Length: 277
Ligand code: DGL
Image (cartoon, rainbow, N blue to C red):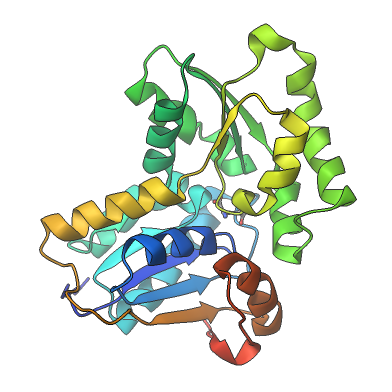
């Protein structure tokens, strides 16, 4: 693959849908001078229930598209794609720096936990691959890690139903069995191991109770991006804020509606370019 990296180029990010906007927001805050190009593969969301082969194919196509537009670093703003395809993406797109969200999320969880009792909420695929359990234990070998697949929360976030009685009922359905185990077995860190889940953090908090820290990977991922760009001499030096380009593979209207809430400013369908991978 012929990849050229240059400080003037944007940072590329992709996710299966709107979830990775939580990472985009953290990056915008940490690196305001950088331009960013975000691709939500809304035509094929969810990734978390698809086969590893399909997820790798989708991730490769998304990256091909971003690389063709010219990016200096790729953030795989999706835990499922990070868990299943980060190494093949690094090999295929070398020398493009590729940063996933699982390792930064695991580092945030280990830092937030005193007893190293973690509960990871993620998609079916991320749970099946034990991506977080491995990443957490690489940092804290004696950590206790429970993983729960909460696929339905992805649909609620995509639908914009991220708060209210339905989201509360779904979160309770997933988390009541954990609470029922009693206080000795309660986690002290709940890892939002899917980039869609910060969008449903309130129902998750109500379902799990006030005790555990709720951890996500957005801030630590943004920190890692800043470190890597700095080390490679690829930071954009400018007083002017960088541009943000939003791409989706389907449903510009809905993407704009849900996305606006997460980016914290109004968006219209015309701010979202629909692309075919
Ligand atoms: N937001 C993605 C993740 O972090 C994927 C959700 C999905 O498409 O199933 O895992």
